[in-house]
Amino acid sequence: MEESESQSGENAKGTVRPTSSTTRSATEIYLVGQPASSIRGSKLPTMRQVLKFFFHTVNESGDRQETFKETVRNVLTFWNLARIKTISERGCREKLTRLWEHWRSLQKSRDRAAKDKVENFKSQLDLLWDIGAPDAVEDIEKNRLLTPADKQQDIAFYQDQRGERKAFMSGNDKIFAAKKRKQEERVEKQRSKQGRFAACEPSSSDSRPQTSVVADTPTEVEMEKKDTAIQPGRYTSKHPYVTVQLPRRILQEPALKELADRLRISNNEIVSVVAAVLRSANPPGDLSEFRISRETARRARASHLRQVAAAQREAFTPPPHAVVHWDGKLVKNVVGEEEHRQAIFISGRGHEEGKLLAVLPVKDGTGLTQARATARAIEDWSCASNVKALCFDTTSSNTGRVQGCPSGGAAGKTAVEAWVQTPRHGTGGESLCQQHLRQNIGPYGPSLPDS
Image (cartoon, rainbow, N blue to C red; front, side):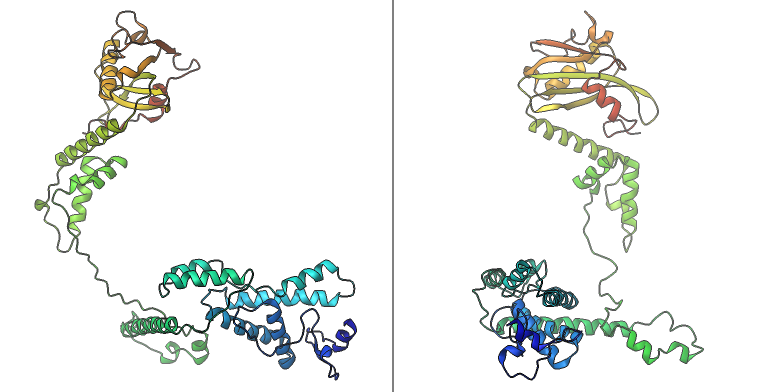
């Protein structure tokens, strides 16, 4: 067989030129078989079918690059008939070029080529020459012209062709073809409409005097370089204004209140923004018809915060054995005045990182004041019966035998089993409250009084 194949010969371009021998073996292609003048069948082409058609066409024309294009066009006909998305035509040609180069390397070194490489190539010849796009299956699922049953059938066919190749195409789907044709007509009609609008729209250069017609008129060469596809015009049918309905009590909308608290926008700022939006309408909105004022914003945000806090307390499940942490700090409010703030945490199983109960303003940092604030927070969150230990730093307001915060009833009406004292700042340890106050308590926040 190798002797007959060597008789067939091949030029430098890889074009197989049969000799004058009339035997069938004289025109047989190495590892591929006889060339074929067409790709036939009701399945997606295999690598063997593609190579057979390629060698037949290149023998006829002698132009390998044109043969690559012609072969790809014939293969794409089958994939389009199967309604399966493929890679670009250029990508198909590059893939076919790599396949031919692989065959060419084996053909050149067939006397010394490793048998395993040859056998591997022969075993792949009857497999699908897969040029499907990476999102081919997703494209089928998103096709609105197909019914769910057709989508499943197309996906199953594609998967079968990549495997056992038992399924086959039954022919052209006339119903789908009609739907596809109508869709293309609608798209073409829309493009033509946009093109007319773009042509009718006066350009900015029309108002200027044209001193040279030759300079402004493009030559034929320049026109050929331009893309002949119809580009969408700048015309838009959308009106510059949109009709909407706004509530009179716009500052009480939950989304607006949440945004103001999240971005830490003051009441004056949120009122100014809403008023500017209303005045930007056409015609400008009458501000007297809306309930917008600084006091309205303050009440709405305070009510929203109370609702959020109530929902948080309702959803909170305290740990069975809870530890209460507290600590105080002097912070400056928005007017620059210092005031006492006390943070109360609770920790336990399920809340190892600590659950913040409250950051309360207190009149001073004495033990009794801290005890009352801590007890109130514990009662508000309904976890007094779960408190088994107290955690605090070693200040006199906490460790005092008479006026200390634990002695003043910080745990409420419950039996405390342990006191945990943490070192002071800078001595090697911090409580959860100390960490929170050091990292998160700033000069302004939704819980601080607004000016």
